[in-house]
Image (cartoon, helix red, strand yellow):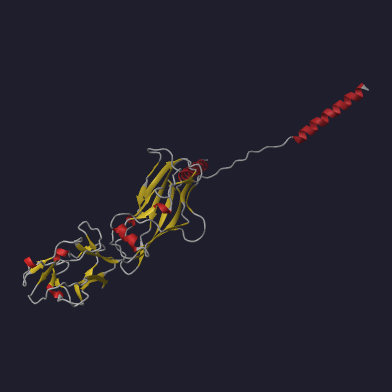
Length: 176
Length: 200
């Protein structure tokens, strides 16, 4: 009799636990989707204002008037509509070169002294190209070269003939 | 004659009683017990991958504009993802969570610079969907209006009781957006986003 009672109690407890378990059973469902992102490789160079706005660069002009002319003098260029050159690259290392497109003048007499430490001082090349920034790691953001019209200076040697000399100065950023 | 009529009436009455008895039916109860169910589904017809795509390989200009912080990048394509719906019949609390798998990367770099947290969902902002799955407020029901993806599950909605059938959570693939800052390695990134409905 005791055995029967114990069996019934045990069975009752098991049923009770089973019912409780059924009531508290955790239910769940799920569904999924994929998400794909493609980031493009980008390499760019631009002339900007102090506000970072891209502009078509005005010329850098050394307009030496007779009253201020010193045949051995050094002249700085006035401000223009741009105040910096910036590069952008998001895919490894890059370099920057500068070139002029004619030899009508000894363009090495024009020295560029960038602000900041990224680009060192250099003289413009004469009808050729010059690497002004060696292998540099991309930061993934616009990086300032520190070059503005005020960075340009012209040093005369007294051998120059009067006249107007013009060249196009081109800066190019390359993937290393 | 009278006795004959009485016998006929008696016989007719017996037949009626017998007939009536034969028309009587037995009855039984019928019981249907339906279990509690919870369901969640990403909705969208057709076949093929169900995905949200940000493909800016052919549109670096927009990428650069976004890098400057002038905008966020929006999906360039959404497939089979027009809504997320839930159905709960349980007379108790239920939660909706979102979790994403780690980003996988294919490209020339190391895949650095882009994180799951750069991907945000703003409920209904571009889809125009309005959620109707959650009613009530306070401790009984609620939902968030935006969230960023993570490998850690995040609760984005909760409620109690029946949802009243399949109901919208108020967003779809067009409500995803991507924030970039330019330090992302170029290439292709992929994750799987899972929405989970649980009734503890």
